Length: 556
RNA sequence: GCGCCCGUAGCUCAGUUGGAUAGAGCAACGGACUUCUAAUCCGUAGGUCACAGGUUCGAAUCCUGUCGGGCGUGCCA
Image (cartoon, rainbow, N blue to C red; front, top):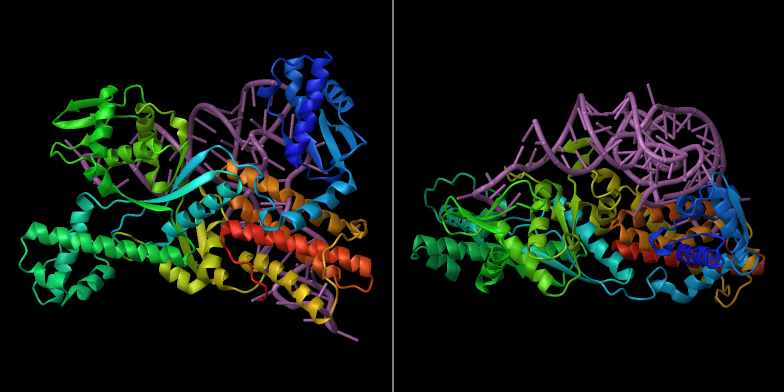
């Protein structure tokens, strides 16, 4: 809707400019904002165009507004009335037929309502979670998974070609530590005396894996292997085992990936070495103190960073440079990385690397997801990764279910800390926003069930929509009209939480309407129109929940 | 010390990329079920947008400084 109005304003300005009533040098560079009005007295939509253009034209905002209004097709088609208000806002009052057309459009487009009609020529690689395969996913990863997966759905709905990827850190020192942890636990399980090393993985899951190994061919061979080989074998086993557990947890959460990308591949294929050479060719590498450094001079990060240690081992940063280069070489136009907020210091480094490789640093966008605190009975549950005492994503899923978990993770902006109230997530009342929204869907479904039981004709062919004259009905329809704009704006801003808030508002409008008005009334034309309306509500709720990856139940 | 994020009603948070009179939910108080699901709805009350300056037609939003909270600042990941 906003796009339609924007083009009306744009052509009005262009017409005025052509007739020399308005002097605009470069219209394309001016950003014309169309916004929804808060107060119905200001119409349905408003634009600040006149305020934005005033400076460039040398006229007063209200004069510019008057010129624009003169060139708008008022009274014909969608614009019923237009007013100039305040400092120079132009308020649009839309014709009733516009809103009726919105309802028809929802019925026509069904599950694609709100989706972009045309695809955008932008290939996106969205990388998220990418937790190290050294232990099960915890709730913090769950938030990243919910944000990432929803963002993927959102961007696809907006016409982007999106691939999702999980980067597996299956190389390097921590794999050795993981393997060594498992080896020690294995020896412990088979009765040897061990002292568990410092800074190793103490979680119960390592002990469980050790028990699994007893009696297996690998387990029997471990005793006779040289130490480094045994550690390597244990690392391999533990990594694969943990990674498949992570995949299972994500699947239970409704998250699947287009690809898992293994870091090991970068080492084995020579891509890592090539990436470092590319940096060196561009003069971005400096050798000092026995190590190879990424030279930050002229780049965005504050100091030089080591790429290859004096021991000859590459750092994780080196692998990340190679990984991002690999992504870009695969032809993606936009890379989106979703990281935990504790990695924020890493952003300028990777961005500088992308830039040093000859790409615009803008091709990389990093979303930082803040921490999650679990709350039970009003008390925060303390978590400490170090001691191995953390609440896993699996446990939360088993307690509250994937729908509530996903929805809750999306009730805040990413960059805001999230308190996840487990009791609230399980509660079956309006306090719980998941149920509140899902219930709106179930209620509409219920109306149609009852209608079928009563033998009411609920076919949706061309009802007279002019009978939908109640203010609540108008508000509902106008909110349905907002949905495509919300999708576009949420996608552009990379802010999936906007969809969540939209749905809560829609559910609120619907519940209020439902409470005060009967859909299955005696008056058959009203009944038909209201069925048409609530079905459209159901459809949009379903579409929005689908973006969030949350089910839309027909009964609750 | 330096860097990033945050600071909005008692609590948890929105705020349409700088717009018109700053909004919800929870908690509190008062109401509504012979109904298509009360898993719901309606009403009341609640504010120095942390603080101080600046930028302009206009600031919760942008810039500077101060205070407070979180996180970084490794040849760790």
